[in-house]
Image (tube, rainbow, N blue to C red; front, side):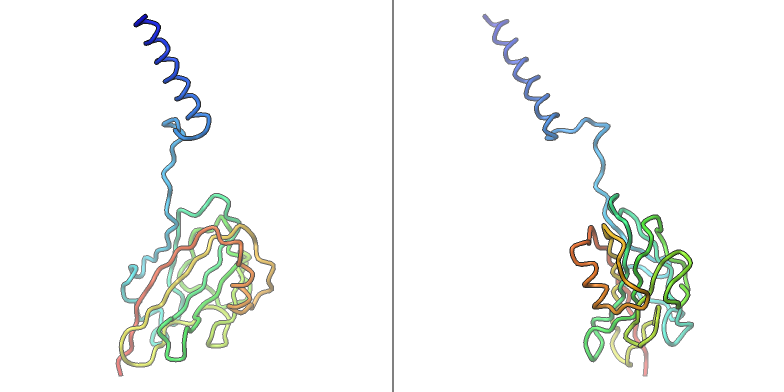
Amino acid sequence: MKKLIVGVLIAVILASSLLALYLGVVQKPEEKTAERAFKLVSPAFRDGGEIPRKYTCEGLDISPPLSWSGHPLETRSFALIVEDPDAPGGVFTHWIAYNIPADVSELEEGVEKAEKLPSGIMQGVNDFGEIGYGGPCPPPGKPHRYVFKLYALDAVLDLEPGASKDEVLKAISGHVLAKATLTGLYSRSG
């Protein structure tokens, strides 16, 4: 009788394990994948750190180098928006780039200020009224935050070069798979 009960228990445990594997409740060790966080970084400044003068209106006014990792496998393109939420007149947009190819994982320092780059990347009009990157240029006083937002999208946007931030935000609506942010600080002395 004990052998029968032990045999039934073993059969139930095996059946439960097989059912759990089938339903995906338990993964085989080789199927486990670590959930990778979508991250945006710059070798020029750390998150929450000061943006070097070189990348501002007081310096060369060129875009800082950026790189990212951990985006979803379904990503078809990226969009980048850089804003100053501390601007006196409200949020000020410093850079809009979109249709960044899914196989691109970095932007080098000093991205050309052109509507469309050879890689297919398109750039929009910032709040300076110009195409491409416009560096931090706050009024003298306390530091402003510059938030770099990178969106992983499940589509390539059907937009012409030179789009506005509103046009890009409308186009990415419903297509955002993940978002990564990087914040830099900058202040100007009197």
